[in-house]
Length: 173
Length: 360
Image (cartoon, rainbow over all chains, first blue to last red; front, side):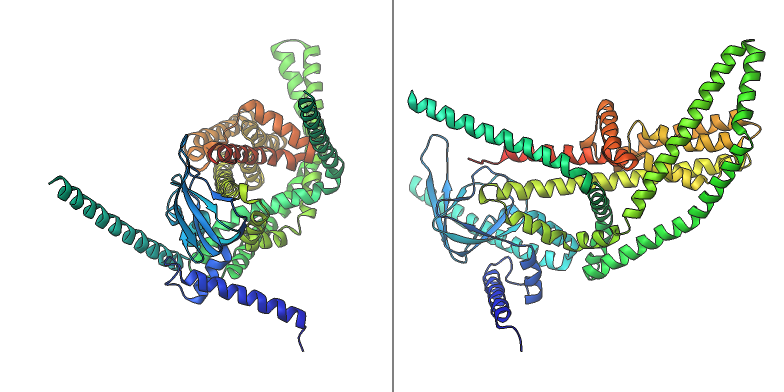
């Protein structure tokens, strides 16, 4: 007969891992991965807790990687010198941000501040590049999904730009 | 005003405790250091080995081998190579030392003294100068032999304490990511991204530096062995144990500026003690060989394999080598420059992090 204390601990750990798998599965970057591959990703992600008002990163900081919200919410804020901060968006449970930083170290284009006490997962470029070298099949899968997300975003931006241009032409004409 | 005085008082008290804590920390390190020195040296050695072997493990893992198995294969391979090399070289060294001592007993130094005295008597007609020179040669020879004995004693002690190194290395390679993640998890949110980024950059630079130094040492060792082999072929084996001596030259090359001289000394010594008929020419060729190896190293090998981010001023090298020697003997001297290189890279990256991240 097993020790009930350890059974509870193990059950809780398993349940938490499964929760994280579920959350990761809902992020487009990891949606194509099977459970074995997700467990490899789980080994290199960082779990952090932020109090309300605490910055996750600041505008202008070197980009390091992406974050996924497990619980809570964050505010995406644009901070300009001499101007008041503008909230661009509020992201809640399951949302992700900063994924472009998986590709390069370009400065962050906005600040992200915890809107309430939040639990957040971080997946960072150094760990991703290491994974890409050690497990190329898995790395390429993630990279491919990331390309699809970025491609989709570019397509939508192009559509919006075209619509805007057409609108301007219509107004001017 | 009172308020200002109170703030100043608070500030001074805070400063006092900070300085006190730093001084206490330094005192604790000084007191504790002698007790943990051997463990620390062993850990540094295991860490260096882990950094050197990690690329091989990563390579095997990228080809589908399970990480644990990849580490085991790499470790067994390296232990096998070391055991084979030691088993081939040690008996040779023992016999060389035996023949060396028998040669010393047969008064090689006295013979050399006689030669010098005759040389001065014939060319300068000055017996006193000759006596001075020979007494200096004797003094130098005895000092050198004493230093060599001390060096081997310290290396022997070191080797005895590193039996556990493979064990520590195995776990460092296997669990380095877990250690890193655990370490990072303890860092406050404010410094989290900066610490992660700096830690990664430091790890990358340090690995590159250590791997570069090791490759450089290996190539210099091979070139020295090749040079001494050719000398042996041309001059009827004046340098016995040339493989071991070449390897010493490679390892000594880790110390910039001083290393090449340290590397050439054993070859010159062995040649002098074997006392071939054309000793002057042999010594000249040994010096030419080591100069040539250095030219090749500095012109081609080093620029390609060693990171330039840790270039050091010659004065810095001399100072850190002396400090390393005082702290941990011959091993300390050997590791002084790489450890200083690591500290330099770390400081550079931390300054980069502090400049680029907004920590307010």
